[in-house]
Image (cartoon, rainbow, N blue to C red; front, side, top):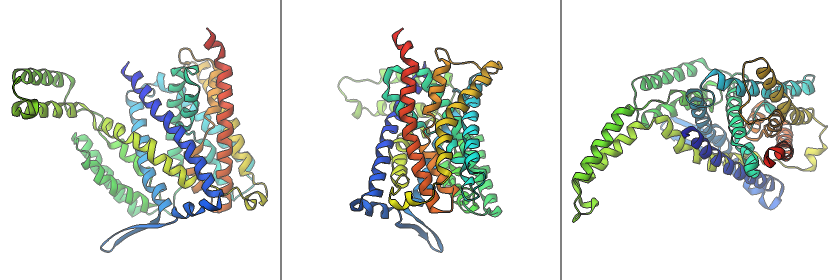
Amino acid sequence: MAVRNFFRTFLHHESVGGVILMICAVLALFCANLPQLYFINEIWHTPVGLSVGNFSLQMSLAHWINDGLMAIFFFVVGLEIKREMMVGELSSFKKASLPIFAAVGGMTVPAIIYAIFNFSTPDSVSGWGIPMATDIAFALGVLSLLGKRVPLGLKVFLTALAIVDDLGAIIVLAIFYPSHALHLDMLLYAALIVAVLAAFNRLRVNRPLMYVVPGLFLWYFVYESGIHATISGVILALTIPSKTVINEVKFSVSIKYWIEKFRDASNSEVEVLANTEQQHIIHQISKSTKDICPLMHKFEHGLHPWVTFFIMPVFALANAGVGLTGDLFSLPVSPVIPGIFFGLLLGKPVGIFLFSLAAVKGGIAELPLGIKWKQVFALGVIAGIGFTMSIFIDGLAFSDQNLVDIGKAAILGTSFVAAVAGCFAVCITSDKEMKQ
């Protein structure tokens, strides 16, 4: 029941965030195409830096968003992956097998389709990672528009699939899309920071600051190493303690003891605020509740609203804007467009469906209760909404700005088509279940 309630809360945040993300993407397009609003695009190119003594780090505002704020996004994604692997939908082979197979299919087939269209074009073939990703916030936002027509089990399956998908995208990002040439000395410094963080975890250090400060150094060393800086967020997430400082029995005994003491210390003539003994007891109860809450849980629940309602919308505003001008359309038709379009819109549902079918027929996995095969295919169509991670990889895959813009336009157009087609597909496949 607790896991189910957590999913309802999680899905509510993601669904609302998905709607906000859509609005920000549309605003970014307006800003990029209306001359009166073009000055907003220039804001993202504003140089912003940090200087302390001889140390200086200068980047444009857009780079701070993509390399800095998005590291926090990846940190939360890393926490979600870790939680799912420990206690959620990926915590056992039986639970994890279907989302894993579905995600692998949903990444492999789109990449192959993209490569088929682009293998003979050296400048664009590097974009094969673009159609691999699913935007969980957008996808759940679309599902939320359908209300109770969509069973919770289908949303949970999409969430687990998207989390595995994110993990795959992170691995692809780290290995195949470095920001520049690798610097082994910086990687060594990053490894030393990770060793310190792992030691803190082992020693059950539960103070957030003890992870935040080394995490900032980790971000800098990863950034300078040549691996994309956002990967530091995932690495940091894996070192955050998931265990409580005190066990359940000790917590229960402590709470009962202090509640009894609180009751004994009550005085009808004195307010709690003025009762020194009761204030001390409240402090002890507060300390116990903090000790029973894993640091990983605190970080995830504390940062999740910021990621959903601030970081991702800001990322959309800074990156979704592409000028749909005559210059863009006057360019020769690039194979990037069909590669992304068919990769996301066709590759996602086909890959998810076929790999899921193979896993179930092979006895490795089983369909969630109440989910039909036609709904799995419909879910695959919605999984074709690539947005955040696809745009992120698009910016790293191409050195030619024209290809970057073409890729963005293809991602936005395909994600819109996938959202509309996915809604229709889910409605059609859910009608009979709704009537029963």
